[in-house]
Length: 371
Image (cartoon, rainbow, N blue to C red; front, side, top):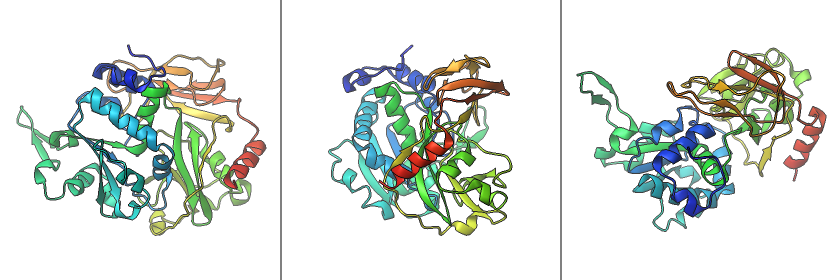
């Protein structure tokens, strides 16, 4: 089995397809754009076209665009490697017209490795089939079919692979880069915390971190606002209720969490569909700065991994705590902080301790935000 370890470009290109797929599985990579489908399974059946979904359609979002600024060279190196490993013929980046200037560096450096296609500034571009339709425009032969006939006479909805495409979100691809080149598993999530009365901040947050804690680190006085605010896991359009009433219950950073939208309690999230946010200066890392995490061994499409730890065990950041099972979809699970296993119930691993005191984390986060 291919191990998670540091590799240079030539060593990554030398990976077999099976080895590359297994690295994705062990690293715990799923669709980071919100779908959560296990990425390794998509790449078991490679297609000619890799579509990079750069549209980040939720109003106010910045995190994926920040990643493309921060990790430009890494994305190019990954595109090069993926072409070799999986025989990809085309890497196509789907970018909103409104973000054309933001992605101009890609336009200037294509060099035959990839191409950038601009698509309408519509929320629906985040949906795979719609994005593909707009990328290929009049070439209907490359659109995803509505239905596919099966050998037994039944039909199923068409998928991107039926038209020769695999679609991956920007952060999903960065996680693949980290696994292939750096030997790093998925332990953190890039997300924004924002609201009508809260300036947006982009965090690299440990998986399983408390939404209440992140909202506090973003500048909300949680005690003063208890009972007045709701925390939405997502943006104004696509979301789930995180915390219905701040201070009562909690929510946690999931593999598919892209934002926490903080709004007045009782107000519908779509009331903020026109929200405007200012581009953040940088990404603030919260690694080692949270007081605890609650990490699921499974997920939306995932069979729970087999726990490799027990209550009371001490674990370290990026230590493997869950081994994927062979039945169904399953991925490796890794610790997102140093600390002790305080609970292991209902396939949730809770880790506490190891983070800096909350007051110190708040001070350091505020200092980073003003740099």
